[in-house]
Image 1 (tube, rainbow, N blue to C red):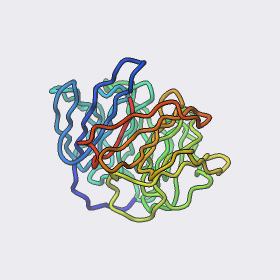
Image 2: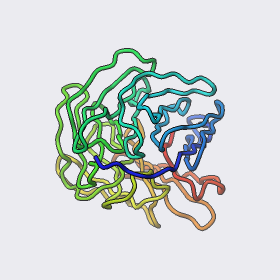
Image 3: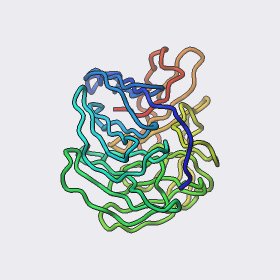
Image 4: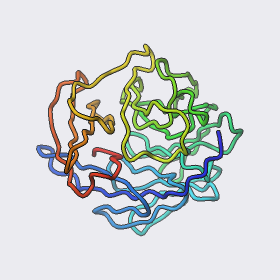
Length: 272
C-alpha cells in the first residue's frame, strides 16, 4: 500500500435519529472534529476514523497505530499495530456495533486484517488481503480497495479467505457493503490521496457476478450506502439542499429525506 500524504482530519456531524415512522438520522463529515448529540470529540490521525452504526461512538487510529474508541469525553485504546499515517487505512465497525476491524502494519502490497471487540477484548487476526483501504463491513465480509487503486478485495471474517471482487476495475474509495456481503458501493477512479470524498458518483456492483446495479433515481448522484436492513440510500445533489432517496433491496423507492441545507457540501457517511 502506498504511503499517502493527506493531512485532512474528518469532522462528523450527526443528526439525531427520529422515530421509526420518520426520517432516519444522517451522519455527515468534514474537517477537524466530531459533533454528535452524544457529545463533541476531536478525531486525531489522518482521517482514519469510522462512526459506529448507532452513531454514538467513533473508532479512530492515531499516528502510532493505536486503535481508539471514543464516545463523548471517553477515549479508550482497544488495540495496537494498525497501519497509520495514511487516510485510506480506515477502521470499520461490525454491523452490530460490537467489533472493530483494521488493517495491520505489513508490506505495502497487502496486509493482515485484525478484529477486536469495541471494549478491547477478543482480538483475532485474519488472513492477508490486498483490500486494506476504506474498509466496509457487510454481514460476515469486509471489503476494501487496494493501495494501488486497481480493484476491490473481500475477506471472510469467519474463515479468513479472500477474493477479488468481479466487475470492479479501478477504485479509490469503498463506501459500503450490503448485508449479504455481495454488493459493494465504491468510487470508480484511480489514484488520489486516499481521503474520504465528500461527494462521488457511486458505482454499485455484485462482487460475485460482476453485474452492475443502477438505482432508478433521477438527478446527479453524489453518494450511496447500504443500510443494515438491506435498503439502499442514494444521495442526490440539490441546488440548495441534497436529498437522500431510500430504496428497498428490490430498488423500489420507499422514502425521500431532505438534508439540512447547511450540510450540502459535507460528506454523507451513514444513514442511521
